[in-house]
Amino acid sequence: MQKTVLKSNAWKISPGKNAEDWDVFRTNGCIGIGWLTDYDYTDFKNIGDVMATLEAEHGVGTPGFGKGGAEMVWTFTNELHPGHIVVANKGYNDIVGVGLVTGDYLPPDNQDNPMQGDETTHRHHVRAVDWLVAKPVHIPGSRFSVQRTLGHLDSNQISLIVEAYLNSYPEDAGIRLQLDRLVAATDCRASP
Image 1 (cartoon, one colour):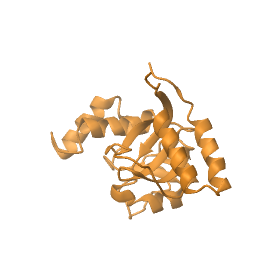
Image 2: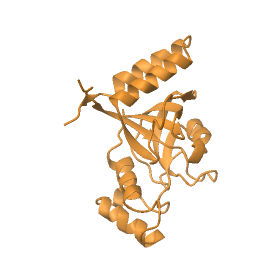
Image 3: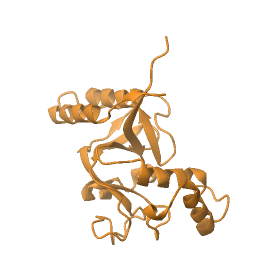
């Protein structure tokens, strides 16, 4: 019998290569991406608009600045919402933090953007996040997460994350409490 995979409102997001920006995002209570640093993503009407701008800025066919990049910009702006879960990854099998999105998209020049003026990263398009768990964990197996900066997590992946944290920190009641919040907030529902 095939196991049912449920969609959730949880997302894997990379805070840079090898989680290079994890500390700055954790400290500032946010998560961010860095395409098109001089734009407000809410000005884009659709993924095609984003893609046309990426191609105009970086050239047609430039790796990382095509359809996949356009989809991630659109998703970060329009499909990620307050109350959703973000899981910050490091590489394919390590998680550095789990948080609850607490705010709407903030462009780089927004006065409420905690990354405004920060020179340690180019990822200034942000969403506020309450980092519920800020401890690292390894997910066993091969390639738990995709290479993409931003990707949807399903119910099976959420279960693996929870299991890895419980196995790595069995005596940490705080993590157990936060993981309960994670599971409650994922709002899993059957895929069509």
